[in-house]
Image 1 (cartoon, one colour):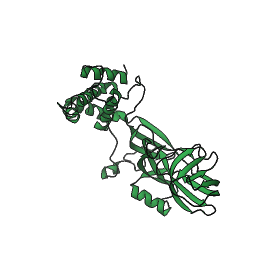
Image 2 (cartoon, rainbow, N blue to C red; image 1 turned 30 degrees about the vertical axis):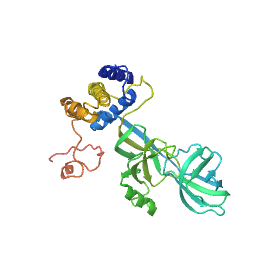
Image 3 (cartoon, rainbow, N blue to C red; image 1 turned 60 degrees about the vertical axis):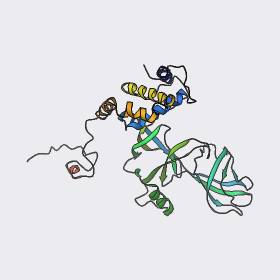
Amino acid sequence: MALTYENCFAHIRHALESDSTASEVSMKSIVDEAGEYLMALHKWKWAEARQAFLTGLGNITGGTATWTQATKTVTDAGKFASYTFYEGDKFVVQAGTGLAIGTYLITARVDANSITIDTSIGPDASDLSYRIERDRIPLPDDFQEMIAITGEESFLNRVRMVGYRELMEYRTDGINVTGAWTFYGAILHTRKDNILTGPIVRLLEIWPQFSDDSASIFTMLYRRGWQRSNDDTFELFVPSWMEGIFIQIVRAMALGYEEHDEMGRSERLARSIEASLELERLKAMDGSVQETYGPINGTALQSTESAYPHPYVTTALPGPS
């Protein structure tokens, strides 16, 4: 039987010998915290279950937008219908009567017709020419760690993950040093929808940016994180062979919150979970699902294998003449 929130609630009540928690911590938050803890315990192979196709987003442009200085609002009918605001989005003023040319930060998407920016760019105008640079790609909601990423055509759309500083240098220089089909990326955490209260999400910052939407241009394999739900009957992402230790974590979390005077939550988890033989057994079993990962890349051992990842098929058989 699949494990659900309701199943876990029953274990919490059994552990506490009560129908509810004495503290103000909800049972659902205890289950979710236990799930986050489980996913952070180890880089589980069973969580490497997701492949995502990422779409590059083209810039949004306009040439006859209205600028209202009093509210720092840009209005352009229907232009922002498909736009999702992320903290740090850039608004570039290209032209406009009395307006200051430059790059500014967007502070909110008001509706499909208007956005606000952080700084006044001049007096009211109705001939604002602009672009919104969308040089970032939203990652899946359950994304936890990138395992691999490649372009739609690996020979043409290569992706090189770099640090923030290097990425910023490429953007500042405005050049792509290895060719038009090499992209540089870095993962960033930021807020979505609202600069103060929006959820924290992960984005793939990318350079060069896209002039038009490019559907499924990147393929990414990733390790998924804990999935939350408001539905008590939601099937939790826990394999059947991991349910036993997950339930132990849930019970330890609940007892840690309720009986903190006897043994704190962290100490209880350290003793009952992190030092357990069962956890070591599950780690070993998890790591044995694939016997080999091939030759080690970038070492002398690699010389025994073809440098080309997909050797040509030939009819000749190697051997002594």
